[in-house]
Length: 250
Image (cartoon, rainbow, N blue to C red; front, side):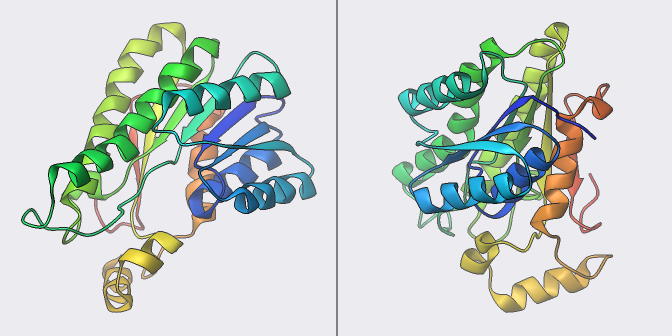
């Protein structure tokens, strides 16, 4: 699988699943643009890991819920690696907090929508004009977008369901230009996301209920994303691929 000399932007590409994707892309020969939010050290560490593996990369800070930051990310990518962008991966997003309907206010709900859905819209709107035939977009949704999520995750689940639907709509719209748009729906993956938001007992129970009897690894998600970004998946578009060890079948 090769992404040789393609420019790949990974929005939210500096830690956990995002870092694993960035490094995988670099190892596949891509020129990687690693976006980080507010932790420059994580961005620089990811770039160093890519370069150690023989790849090329730059780190660009920015808030992907702000159009001006997204535009700057795209400008720096084109300045560093040329005008054409071959792949966009949207990892930006999060749960933020677990809140029931009674606990949520409008500000919290709308913030989750901006973080998970608006960020995807803004990056695609800015990047797609610089993509040619054969380019690919891979959006990160979640198992929560399939099954409604766990306790207190209704806003997160709703936003990730919207990412799945937006992916399908963009696959239809961009297909005639031979730009593919797919989505990945991770289940229980061993990351700081679950370190922060999921109790150890819950993680153990979920892993035990999974046919493969374990959590997934960020590197396994990265392998799938790289496949969807590559020409080897050239007849796949509009898909939302589950990667959850068999925990949920869509």
